[in-house]
Length: 472
Ligand code: 6PG
Image (tube, rainbow, N blue to C red):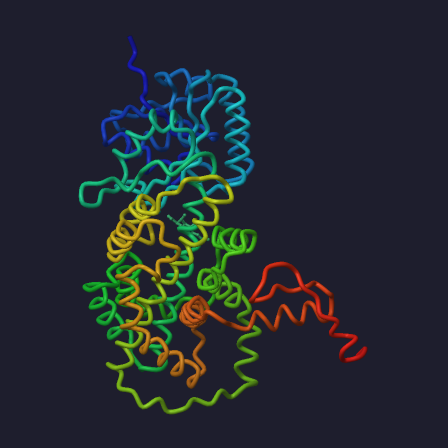
């Protein structure tokens, strides 16, 4: 009798094929299918893995799988997911599982989960992070869907996921869109983290005057300490990368594009009314970067004066390090604030310790200090904001003077550091018990009789400002 495949992968571009190889290396028999069938042959020619089961049609693919059938879709987010899932449903039976491992928008996942559940099929929207390398040797996996589906699929996912301290960077996140939501927030943090690092680069290069070799050394040192992370590590390597023309970085245009997951995070934060200004600054910086020609024109028009900052490069470097650390912490504080709001709005019981464990290895934002975040959440339980935990509270107090001073430096030298500045403003806004909102309430009531609340009693109040001052 022919041996059935344990799991199937559809979509054999870079991520799909590497995930399939990862599964096969872990001893699973993996059915392969791709809409352009010749791609299956290409994969088989390049990787004739003994655990691969090539197929040439959706029917053959489905029929090669043991039951309940476990299928991973690694196709472009959007219409392709619906089209493929619909086709598969013609051959699937109740209890079978379709897992979407792409960067799908969580609302599509919520819709698909309900749609396929009506046909008895479990749909699992699952975030996968780590790029090609992660997919091949251990990604971070953020699975959503029904607990029954996770019971069947989870052990395999945990097996192939990255491991940190023996624990897999994969655990059940929550129903329907929860997994893709967490991946979306991961990407929002990813954008801001990259932006904050690029601001550190700009300051060290333009203000401290460091060259690529020195930048490489600074990032190498940072990566040995509390900033140790995947993004700092690859940045260190970028500074030391040369081809026949010299440093590759110096040949790259100052424009950064995106596929849009960071935009979803910002839109969601707006939707749920959560301040994610640091995350948003990463997105805005990419937008601003696209106006390259206008920026060049404006740079010619304004002769920005730079004031002497009277700092030695080593002093400035340490100031940047501390500020980068705090900015990264604010990225997580905002990311978790958004997750908290989403959990409440969509009825997901998100466990922050488990979510942080997902980010600890395999993914793009993996970092050493996530261990401290795990401990802070474990000790503090349902804390409102990461800033309020004992460990990060102490860190903020320690590094705040550097952050404040760095902002003066950036301002005096005309260096744009929106993520770092937003981190400062976020902290100041969150820790100001009485801000300027009373005046905004008064203005709304003045021009639109929108009413206001009072400090001393509850209810809505209106003052006849116009009668008092006369029509303007
Ligand atoms: C990951 C990445 C991955 C991809 C982003 C890039 O976790 O592996 O987030 O999903 O790199 O989609 O996003 P942009 O093209 O929007 O920068």
